[in-house]
Length: 156
Image 1 (tube, rainbow, N blue to C red):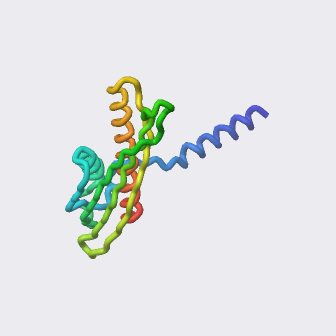
Image 2: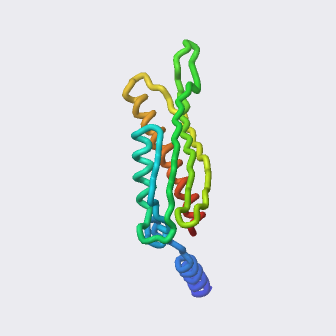
Image 3: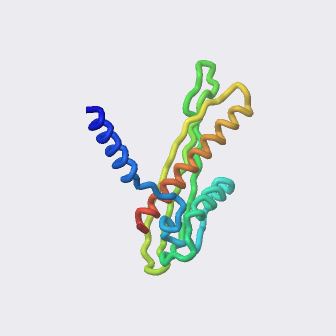
């Protein structure tokens, strides 16, 4: 009886391990497009970070040559105030209007991606600034992820 359990458990574990479909994210097989032109406008720091993160996935040897136009819009609004009318939370919204133009066939794809984060106002000003930077970096990662997902879907 113990031998049968051992064989069954071992075979199930081997089956699960062998069916793993692990792939590297930044492999050459995943890079199926080349960004020949990249035009991004908006907040300069945010634009620079987004451009660098997206261009890591561009492959110069790819047949799919594209032009990427991105218009960023960052908006900070008051989310919540306390009873003394002091701001306790801000809402930070990052919106990206993306136009992907295929240079080989002049096809165009237009998409808009929006992400929003709420961060707390602390008693210490530097802590509030750190919360704002963390929220901004989180928004950048979300927008870059959505743009790259769209490119992977379209060029897979």
